[in-house]
Image (tube, rainbow, N blue to C red; front, side, top):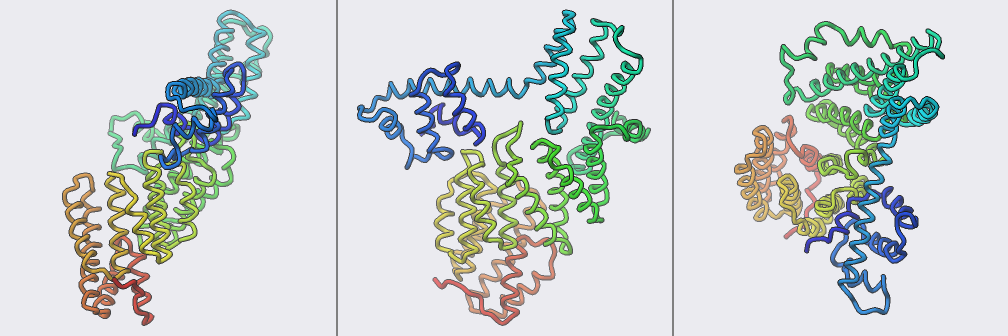
Length: 497
């Protein structure tokens, strides 16, 4: 059954927005109906899942208007009123978020009308407010727009009350903000190009290419370096570029990480999320090298939990945690058999998008059960996953294969390997290199199943020994765990079918 519009709206709210909306609904200026406020209080108890086993309109009505016979038309009317109020709240939130931008436009209007007193008063208010804000590119552009408004006001108000030094200082600040924008935007593109060189191609005639060749950016930065109020941002950009251009030197990663941590409180959530993503990207590249794999698996996990615990994923772009971030972190925690932290991750599943939230939560619970050696419970969670998402389907199938091996169920294991092979072969969205890695995993696992079927522990051990000499094997840590147990003379602990 499709959710009513009201439920769809409520599902999009963040925890902070829910608290703000509670306050909004009790203000007479916006809402005069106590019943509508009560309806929100009832519905929010079912947030964020609104599971049909718990939530129903009949149940809501019985609490909203106790003792009355269910009246769908009346309830729909209250649903409609609350929906409209939430839309009003969202509109107000947008205006509030853009208050500074709107006030700068008003500032320009005061200038145009020659209203100097109003201009000066509002200018001081905006400047004070901007200085309280955390840094991102939007804030930098607002500082520039504010200073630009002051420069432009000279046409309306003249300069008779200003000394030449004051006028020069205002222009110097204007140029400082402008240079910050130019340098920051240039370095951002360079970072993207360094990190995603397979995606972005800078041609010979490109403006950025010519700027780079003429070494304009270092010169511009040199002019403002000693007086730049946003030097921490540019220094971080340079540090990021150094890290990405010298990836073999892992000390550059730690230097960059430390620099970010030192300035952590200066940035907005979205800026922090972007900067941490560069660190995560570096970690992922190091994960594929056997020498640095475990070190940077742990670093990647630390970065992800930094985002989760700080709720940095909730920013101007989205209220939700990305599925891929949740999934990648789950896979890495599984690789390191960090069962307790998988349990910690499960608590963040409620921040995923509503349409896929349950499936990823079930997957995380399945991994938690698997690493707790409760294979039957892991299967129960896997059976609850209903998504058609290809990546999630592969994750489900790979975990099932591990379960079948641990249970010594060769029949199911080999059958599942064949079906997964077909799925991979016919999926044009999977990159060729990734397909090859999947095939290598399936081939080795099939050999292990066949040896296990014959109770040939020595044969399984020899296959695992061969795997230990390979690089870039997916689920290497799982193979390694089985290998170490057998090397120590321990028989593989399995549930027999």
